[in-house]
Structure formats: C-alpha cells, structure tokens
Amino acid sequence: MSPARQRKTWILAAAGLAAFGLLTGFDPEGLPRHRRLQLEAVRLAAENAALSAENSRLAAEARALRTDPAALERAAREELRLVRPGEIIYRLDAQAGGTP
Image 1 (cartoon, rainbow, N blue to C red):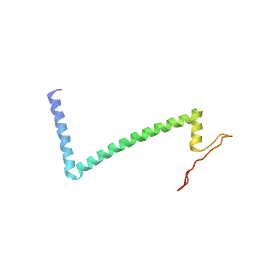
Image 2: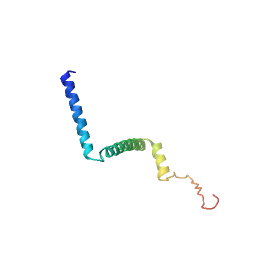
Image 3: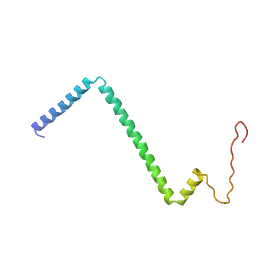
Image 4: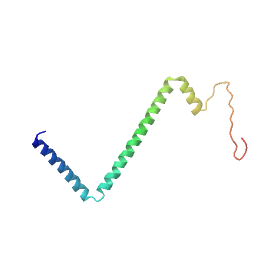
C-alpha cells in the first residue's frame, strides 16, 4: 500500500472514531444503550436460531405426515386419540386422593 493511501486510511479511521466519540458524547446513554442493543441483538439471533430449528423440525414432521403412513397413524393415535376398529382401549386414570 502506498504511503498516501495508508495516510488516507488512517485519516478516515480517525474521522470515524471522532464521529463515534462525538455521537456518544452528546448522548449520555450512548454507550450503555449501545451495549443493551448489542445484547438484544445476540438474544434475538439466538431466538431466531431456535425458531429456525423448530421450523425445520415441523417441516420434517409435515413431510413425514404426507409421505409416511406410520407417521400419519402415530399422529392420529396420539393427537386425535383415534383407534382401529376392533381395538379395545383400557384407560388407567388415577383418582384424586384415592388409589388408582
């Protein structure tokens, strides 16, 4: 890098640093606010990652329900409480305060 270009880079960096200093100097909440916003950005990024993973899981489940008969039967039995004809269901509900 030529000396003139290197000097221009240093001047631009110093100007940017001075602008940042002026902006935070006029706003007493500048640096604490910046830190809070950074933490919020990190929290939102983690939340986005979790939601993206949940979306992927739900997309895989939807794909399985469209293509896999076993997945469809499992969902019908667990979520809709459906049974096949001729099956006998035994419910073992515990009574409050008594023996099951």
